[in-house]
Every structure is written in C-alpha cells, then in structure tokens.
Image (cartoon, rainbow, N blue to C red; front, top):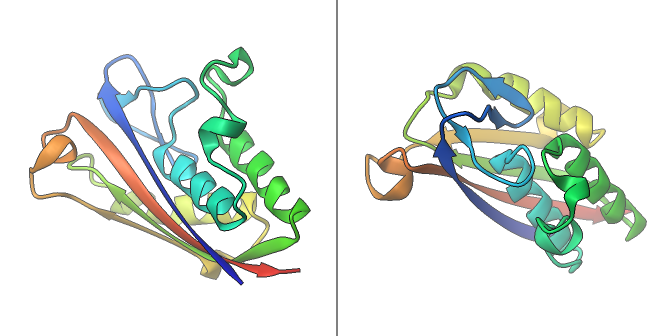
Length: 157
C-alpha cells in the first residue's frame, strides 16, 4: 500500500466559473488558473502522483504548456490515474477537504463524490469530500481564494 497527500489553492476572481469536483457551482467568482482550476481535483492529482513518487501536477501538466490552457480538470485526473494504474496501483480510498468561506458547498458534495468515483472507476463509498471554512481567517476566510487537501491510499494491483 502507498499513501499520498496533495494540496492546491487558487485565487477567486470575477469572470471565471467556479468548478469544484467536476461540478459547476453558481457563484459570482471563480478559480483563477491555467486550466479550469478545479482545486479539489488538483489536490487529488497531487496526492495520487505523490503516492507513486511520480512528482506533482505541475510536472505532468505544466502551466507553460498551451495544451492545458482552459483544460477540464477531469481530463487531468483521468490522465493522472492512468499513470497510477501504469505504476501498478489502484485507489483504496480518497479523502478530500475543500476550504472556502463561501459559497456553501454542502448541496454539491454528493455530486462531487459521484463525479470523482466515476472518474476513478471506483465505488462512491471510496470517495470522501468535505467542506469547511477557516472562520474568516487567512486568504480563504477573507474570500480571496480557496484551497483543498487530499489524502489517498493506493493498493498494489
């Protein structure tokens, strides 16, 4: 078995969609980034890559590569998971925490879990997604940005 940890953060800006866990969230601000800036999926990719000692998301999907400009992070996750499978591992489980002062994410958590389970070809019971705030402290608490943490357990196949 292998474990991996991932983290990602993006600034919130106007004129961008807010996409989290493959779900478009109605909100006045969206994540700024080279791709669609889906923070929990980026943290998950880093956790998967880290568990296999394959580097990080920036190594495999650099923001200097125009191919990834505006990319759907679900594609990035699928390509990441293909690298994990090629290394001889499958997901045991994933635990993801999204940190955002607003919007409230509870209504979207179930769909995020379903999306991620579908992308990783696993049962939804293997995917945990939670949301929290930082009680108005720091860049997430002020609404300047959002962040996400992910931990994965991989099993040899």
